[in-house]
Image (cartoon, rainbow, N blue to C red; front, side, top):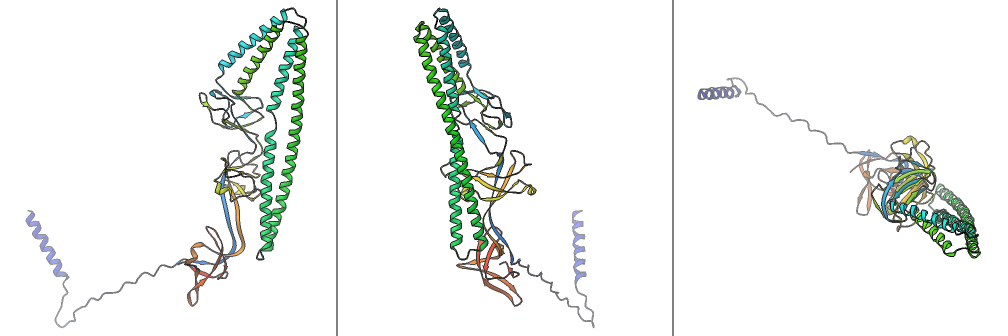
Length: 447
């Protein structure tokens, strides 16, 4: 069966070949088939660019977060294990509110025992029948209260305000030095435009005004510190007076051993309360919790930041950059800020604070702006102009060719393509300033 099918197939193929052979009749011309050339595809057109006039800007864009300006990092004063954490990120807190504490069950039990011992010592002194016992006890309590008040006042020294104000003065002074240098450079170069000189002069005036303001803030901070220091010294005098009163009461009679027992018991209570205070974090002011890095059971080291709180207002853009990136910026530099992906929120902003040096572990940049409807924690895009050439000729980088020391473009002219040398100025990722060699409207062919 298969052989029969194969034979039929071969016959059909032979008939097909025979039908394709050209038929020639006697007396007729043989038909000759000739090849027809196909049209070739035109060569691909090269990209052209037109020389335009506009602004060439070298910009540094970075992203920060919209956070409170005035922040404070809190830490325990002793090592320990966390017992409770009573707040979380975003919570609003009031001054004196407990935020977290360490495992202090033993200290609390010890304090209860010491307070009972103090009460017992006071009763024994009172029951001794000496006429001066009440006076001694009262003098002892007065001294303890005076010491506590003194410690509280010392803990509240406004030294951070003075330090921050001094740092701001130093930063504003650097800003003024930079502005003076930029102005001197602009004035000393004959090719500087009037607008460029005027701009550097305005920046110099602004830098002077910023420095004057910072110096006034430093003066106010130092005055406040001086007044606070006087209050501390006054409290030290009260402690001295309380010590004299206690000595006087003790010397007026009474059982010296019982008086000493009361004093020792009170000192033990005070020491334990101090240990408990060192193991407890409380809010120093009304504010909002920005960061909590601990949870119950964690082991913590003394003086390691575990909670960050801040005043709710004002807010500013805070970004962490590399040292190289921070060198592109200056205190007082003006740019634009906008909430990420929201061009309609764009406003002018100014660099408020930079790291003091490359030795700073925290390379944080702070940018002041007014974005009233932007929620706390939002991402902020900051754009700072580093260099600019206004109303100048420019081409995209891909339109410019470089060979050895020669920089040139290929012009499209009625006579054909011509090579033209050019001199470039400011170069950015998308625009290159052309200072000579072409004119506005010239068409350049990309090679």
